[in-house]
Amino acid sequence: MRGTAKGDEPDPLRNWKADQRAAGIDLRYADIGREALRATRRALFLEQTGQCVYCGRAIELEARTRYHVEHFRPRSRYPDRELAYDNLFISCGPQQPHGHPQPTCGKEKKAWFDETCHIEPAPEDACQGRFVFASDGRIRGDGTPKPIA
Figure 1 (cartoon, rainbow, N blue to C red):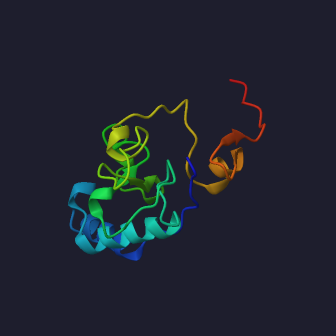
Figure 2 (tube, rainbow, N blue to C red):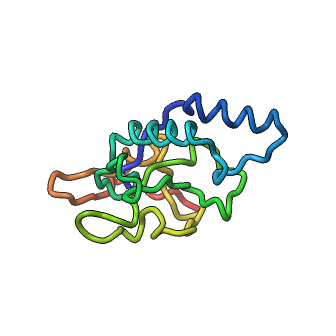
Figure 3 (cartoon, helix red, strand yellow):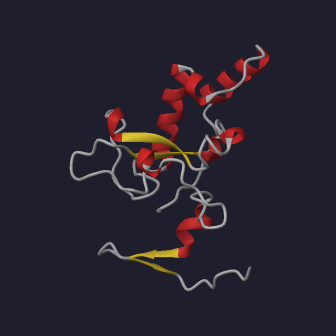
């Protein structure tokens, strides 16, 4: 996981949520407005420099079948985080031009999440700072000791 530094929630998403609340409508990701979804995808893409938050594959924003708006903490288990912007990331999707989907990414990951065994992809220092990424693709820990439980 490369991680990402989160920016501010896009205005169209914030405005859509406010309008829904004002109308007494429950917020659901499935109901998100087109403009808010487009702005959210674009903001996530820019934050992550066009890369999957998990495996680092290049994301093509125009190819919607090749990426997935990822809920780090799954909607099925964390319904209160369904539209929390700090829980949203872009992950590669099921249709990749070269190779198969990664088992850790997008819809392949499914609702897997273990609160006791994860590294938060944001903020940046919670993830990237714990690893050294070599130019040959190898990844190793930075030597930070594991916390004592």
